[in-house]
Length: 257
Ligand code: G
Ligand code: MN
Image (cartoon, rainbow, N blue to C red; front, side):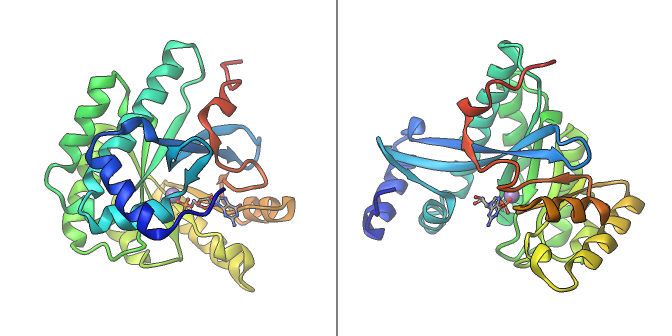
């Protein structure tokens, strides 16, 4: 990837989204797999901005300027539209209807129109909300937990899956697991490397078993980590061992058997 000066990114990514140059934004997909069978059970959408051929920028470079410009909701809408386009295309071409998860900035959960705007996009595309998982990424404070809990409840009522992302990193808190009616958790890859990490994963898996929700471990890079995460009680995994995030076309071979 060719290095691009910060100023260029700051100005251009904001202008690009404001001017509606939607085709420059598209997600890469990273598979999520069942640790027991190794079958792909879905994907995580990770946004990329491609301002010119051969230049592809990841979320950590494009999201901060968009946040500073107050365009988080616009970015969310563009991402959900992209993902719905992929899901409806898969449906119409007879591919297996695997779910796709999308990262949401915790601030958006306090927006009173978040659920209605998101549902409207799935309806327009004829996509079932059950094919979409919304991952709450707490790199920033969640803020109003009660408002977030109401939003998660109505997302679940609409049929969306909702998970707590990067549990164990940033501001992600066990308290949120107690308050928000999420359908699963994604455990941060830090636990794979920490001395007592697998004991904590096993404890979290027991909590999730009692709650009746799924556990996915992120950042799995080796067979040993995959085996140990499964033994600790996680059902699902994601990481470079299975696949790096790739352009959507890479996964076209995943058809119904
Ligand atoms: O937390 P979240 O699931 O949103 O993280 C996705 C990020 O983690 C992506 O930027 C992706 O490239 C990175 N990632 C995914 N799998 C691995 C992995 O196995 N190892 C490392 N180091 N990073 C990973
Ligand atoms: Mn995520």
